[in-house]
Image 1: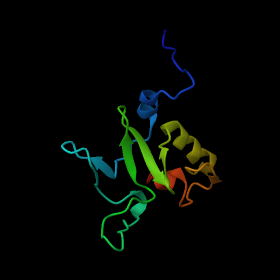
Image 2 (image 1 turned 120 degrees about the vertical axis):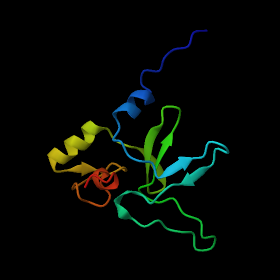
Image 3 (image 1 turned 45 degrees about the horizontal axis):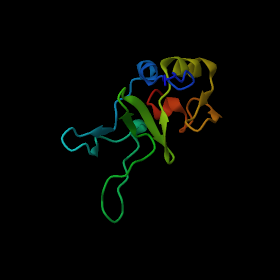
Image 4 (image 1 turned 90 degrees about the vertical axis):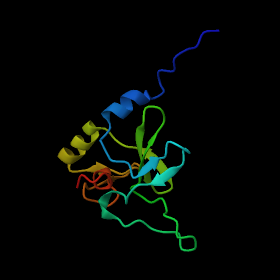
Length: 121
């Protein structure tokens, strides 16, 4: 049986190469493969702590690298979203309208826009 290439699937290597370059807020430790929180997310938002345990919490704006190609994803709401490309960011700055990770169209300086979440505005 031959393996067929699924051309409709994203080619993550190409996606990772075209993404905005953001510094991850979450890093993986090599020795034990656990995730540690490296710094506060973009936009100057202060990181929240769990009220009972005092552990740092994941929050909107956290950035992590996933998969073998290290595709950047940004946490928004309760989900991880693939960080957009340079071309998308340029289009949003020139159009005067931007998108949010959940697909809404907003003004570029809206707190939920990709441009603000990525620290470009």
